[in-house]
Length: 494
Image 1 (tube, rainbow, N blue to C red):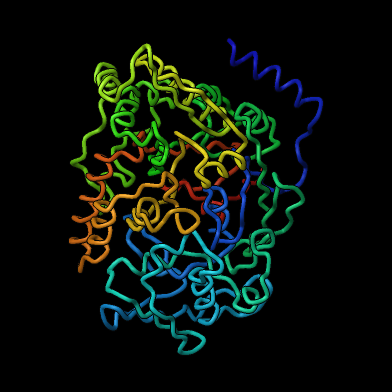
Image 2 (image 1 turned 180 degrees about the vertical axis):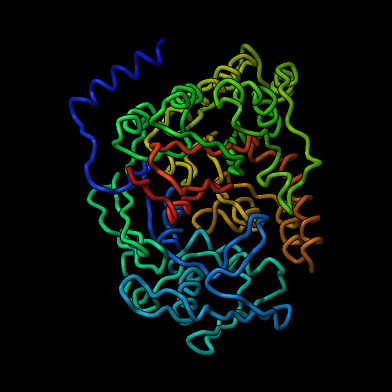
């Protein structure tokens, strides 16, 4: 009843302010707007998904998360020598200039430039040099062998001369992808044009999920994906004007800790928080069953995943015992600050976790911020505890990027400031494996150690949900939640 009343009230407000668009633009409602359209520096999920549409990559991944040729195929000439051959039928950059091997070299050299630090440079540090042989061919020479190396070359490619002139790619993207920027009139709204047929896709940042759903029902947006509470999905499911599709996903939701903080640096505190959270209840009642419990960043069915890892059990008594061992009691309770975004689903989950922590004696101050402020705080280390999700993870180099001591921001995404010689050594040993099976076994050890040290509390892998107007066709949900389906999406003829 409360949901219907809220929808009715919001609908009346929208009714007075909006009318259904008359043009053929396909409109996509986003929970958060993109922050940076330079693929060398973008780290938020929305930017990464839109950048996949704007920029081509040397390498991509198949459905089994194995590297496959995208813009180039490759030969392994020696354990530390890869030769890449660009597709002779490759697309030009959006301004008409040809994409050459020199552009590939310039893109990766700029990522590795210490004067322009990129959070994506971590795994690429093994590149010793890049040699351009001709317009279609280049060599990568490595400092050490790494069978995973081709899978690291997934950054969108930029024109060399535009890099040299410091072109503002972050706000004026210039790639060779299937879409190009049409306009970006305001921070929460931008339009892309599909190069193949001129179809315009407009992205609209609509933070409130109820408003997003109402706009979908009214035809003011045509597509929404993810970030909708279970009750809104149930509400949409019986609407004839809307189609709803679910697919199993690999996006990893977690709680992160600041390991430089006096309270959250205590392992027993982190373990107490983990045992206090009833993941199964949140998955069932908040996410509508649309998630799988997680024990590690990589899903157990990933080729480098660890299916033997146990989930952290919900055990309030064990949580209370751990807090007592750490020196906390009713007279001296543990007090934590928990940060999240203002997204309604994330706030609701955080509020439930706050209550579950209170039940074991942890007093938690919940702070929610707009995405830019929240994400800025996380990157700069201004938090005790926060919740986020990793999206689109394909290769286990994520462990260096997120947990190695050399990856403290801005050099990487070790935002919790984990400094562990044991974790560093395991990651380095895994990277030096001489075959994929050897590396897979080593990365399973990495994940086991991380579960013991608990810089993250693994929560779940969220399913993906796609809701669209009934005349929208051709969109396919990806396991990592990317927007590649927009390359085929179209509006059915009336």
